[in-house]
Length: 331
Image (tube, rainbow, N blue to C red; front, side, top):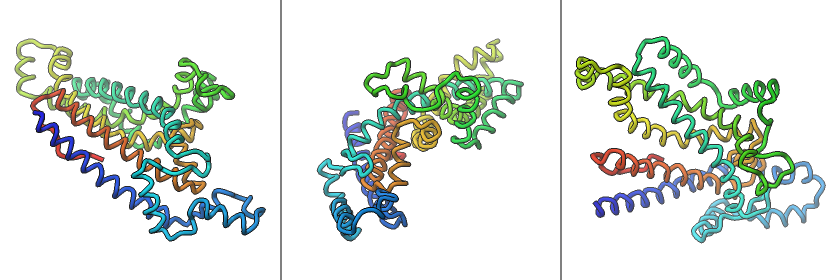
C-alpha cells in the first residue's frame, strides 16, 4: 500500500511538472503572438502624452525590448525561483495579487461547488428513482434547459430579478462599498455571495443531475434491486439503501471533474456582478496587457485544477477501497 501510494504520488508530481511546462510554453507563445500591445493597453490614451524616452523606460522596465525567446527563459527562470514577476496594472507582486483574488474566488467557487453538487445529486436521485414520473419530466426539462444557458445570461437574469426588481440582494462586489476586506463580516460576505454563487450553482447542476439520473436508473433496474422490490421494498427504500451508495462515487467523480468548468464560469459571473475575484483579474490582465499576471493566473489555475483531480483520485479510493489508485492527472 505504501509503495503503491508513493509510486502514485511520484507519477502525479512528474505528470504535473510536464503539464505545467507545456502550459507555460503554450501560454507564453500565445501571449507573444497576441496583437495587443502591452504598452498601449497599459497606458491607454496617456501614451500620447508621454515622451519617447519615458516610453523606452517603461518598455525596458517590463523587459519588452527583448526577443520573445529570451523573455520566456528569463520569466521561466524566475518562476523556478518562486518569482512570478510584478503585475503591471496592480503594481504588486503577481503572487500577492493571485493570493488576494483567489481567497475571494474561493468563497464563490466553494459555495457554488457544494450547492451544485448537493442539488444535482438529489435531483438526479429523484429523477432516476421515479423514472418517467412528473418529477422526472420537470427535472429533465430543468437540466436540459440550463445545460445550454450561458452563465452571463443567467447572472443578468438573477441580477435584474433579485437585485433590481425585488431588492433582496446587492448589485455587486464581495462586500459593502467602502468597507475594507478585513472589516467585512461573515454575514455581509454571504449576502454579497448569494447571487454569484446561485448563478454558478444553477448552471452547474445540470450535468450532475443527468449523470446521476442515468446511474440511478441502472441501479433501479439491476437484478439486486428487482429482487429487493419483489421482497416488498419500496421505491424510496431502494433509492436510499441501494441507489445512494452506488451512484455516490460516479457523482463524486463528475463533481471533481467540473472544477475547471467552475473556474471558467466564475470568470463570467464575477464580471457580471463585479466580484473582485481571480476571474475578474483574468479579464483585466488580458484586456490591459498585464502579461506577468495573466501567465501567473494561467499557471495557478492549472495547478489548482490538477491538484483537485488528484485529490479526487484519493477520495475515490477512500469511498471504495476496491478501486486502485489512478494513473493520470485529469487536467
